[in-house]
Length: 45
Image 1 (spheres, rainbow, N blue to C red):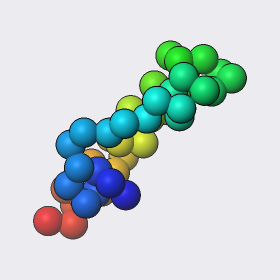
Image 2: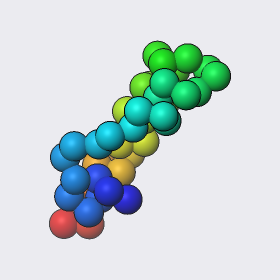
Image 3: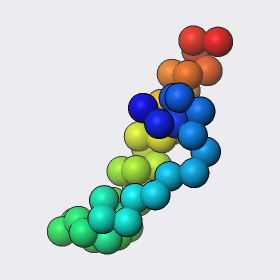
Image 4: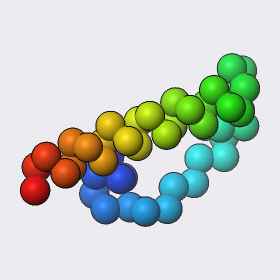
């Protein structure tokens, strides 16, 4: 939601470092979500 609204800085400390799956997997998931939202926002314009 934040990226779709125009945010370009995200703070996700607990979402990344607090995950049991590890930092790398959590970062991959976060990047995939951001990429998906970015693509959706580009289609709307």
